[in-house]
Length: 352
Ligand SMILES: C[S@@+](CC[C@H](N)C(=O)[O-])C[C@H]1O[C@@H](n2cnc3c(N)ncnc32)[C@H](O)[C@@H]1O
Image (cartoon, rainbow, N blue to C red; front, top):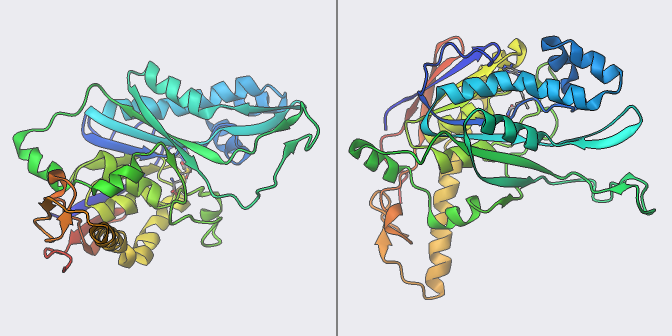
């Protein structure tokens, strides 16, 4: 397959002037979460009335002003998406006590409303059930009723589309077939509750000022979303790039990517992360192939007969839609300019 390109842009994503209208197939992102204290300062820098509202215990005002700040980026996301393009937004709700009152600020509702106002259409969403190490955590009055609260152990992945279902030219049809996923992956990935995602980054991998504010999502989250909603060679945008997890997943999956990060320290560390983690980027594909082989063996042992065969790999597959599926094998990378990367892929297939 051809090389892919990846670009980190240091700056705010409320003006993505580097990206022309209608040129992005997929957006995968996680914004700073409104009403989560670690982001108060960032939101207040853009709109100082937010700090005042928080000081005065005016939660509703702070919440809606923070979402107004995010809306600048969402407007740009809608502009750069191509017709039929998809936006996947990971966001969690915020539980907070302000002015002596405990409440939950439903970020997923506000982000969903913002995109719908801007003209995108909602698709079925995913609930990401996060692993918890605090099974007995109580909020509120503990064992006494009418003042205790469920522990928030999930986040949302909103999925929205610009216009109707994407149209594919005859030239795109083979690329689409090569970008397929396995039948058994489909059954897990398209469930609406995700648990046990791999690659969770607990806290901060390295003690640097940037990393301590990263709030990175697990690698598997953008990896799945990119595999599910885009084609090989498509362009994936992350307007809140953080440590660059979406970019690494796009590299692993043979998609181009571009991302904005306002924190220059974090953005500057993405190159180091690519250097560190690139050697492992072929592994998710290898694991998927190994897992498919186990699936075939297990099902074969139960007497299942497969009517289709993979052309690149030779092993059986459940449906004809999987017969041209081919997973890219990242082989090497170059930093072509500061923050710009080119990734090359092995031309031969993973051996049987
Ligand atoms: C929740 S984190 C994203 C983490 C990322 N998904 C990862 O895996 O590392 C949100 C990021 O958005 C950045 N950010 C906040 N406002 C921004 C803006 N207007 N434009 C670009 N980046 C912004 C923050 O500095 C932070 O790194």
